[in-house]
Image (cartoon, rainbow, N blue to C red; front, side, top):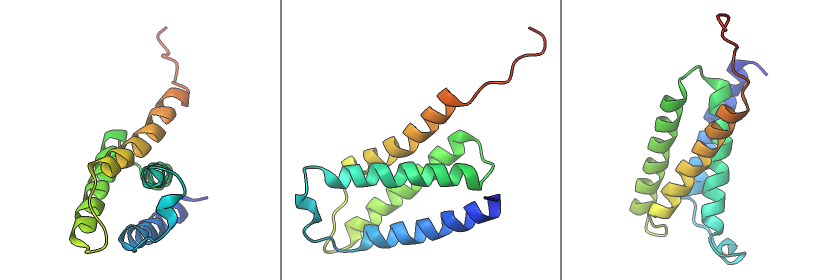
Length: 116
């Protein structure tokens, strides 16, 4: 896919995930303990993958932008009467994004130094 397609997918993903984070969730919380943390981790891992393909930004900038989005989501949820903010959710958001970037750094081949 082209960078423009990834950018469109990223924008649609942000809109869809923001809607899901704002939606009242009933019944899903009983599937297993901390399912919300797993969902936050997975969503931010996916957002990191798409963002990395969509934009030519340094890794630290992408991590900071996704962390800012995660903080914004928690602030939004705190303002909703049927949701609540959670530091644990923010940590799961950050861990999801950071995990992708850590894996990328580990598994991306490094260019050899021509002077070696």
